Amino acid sequence: MTTIFAGVNKVASAPDGRRVIRIGVFIPVDCQVLDAAGVDIFGSMSYEYLSLLENAVPKVVIDSTPSVQIHYIGSVQPGESIQMTSNQLLVATNHWSDPEVAPGKLNIVYVPGPDPTADFPKGALEWLAAQAATEGVDILSVCTGIILCGAAGLLKGKEICGPRVFQPALKQAGFEPKSLRGDTLRWVQDGNFWSSGGVTNGNDLVAAYARATPKYFPRPLVEFICEQLDVGDRPQEYQKDMTLEKYVADLLALRTENAA
Image (cartoon, rainbow, N blue to C red):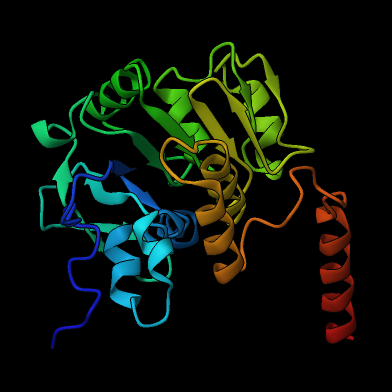
């Protein structure tokens, strides 16, 4: 069975000379499904996606879109599976050593959160470090992607975010950031390095990045897509404190009540 979405964003398919944005989703070990899902916001701003909806979307919107090509980059070979949470698998399009995704070939490297205790292949860390050092490449880290970026040496001297629950661990990890903002902020930018808090804060990060990058995504297009996807409207600063201790206490009380 074929669907209209088969192959969308696999290759740049705009019929004219519009700009092509090349995005690499970097998963050298595994990742959380919801962390990776934020890349679909980029896909939803693309010519490849919106041109399929030409009967529902005004032509001027489609004409304003960039062409977007998305690579799923792992330590497995193209066509092999990358493990994700919730019993899902993702098919890799590239191994990180492929010339197609070498430093200088991508505009954005999107790093969804892996198992934070995983061992990352040395070559994969070197690849990520080389991408970050390449002019014109932006790194977007989501959730525990901050651990992977730290292992690659990207956090030294940087203002970073990361999940709220991981802030104490990040302080002790030896990554040498300039400051940790994950206690109060959903996302933060420092130069070409963008990082978010946990999981769906990656959606807020992508929306903020797209708004800040009109050379890739016209602002009216960004606002239209964010409105349609219902993302990007939360403030950068958290509006309430993390209440892990309260929930733990409530669960312990519930357990005691049920055992009585």
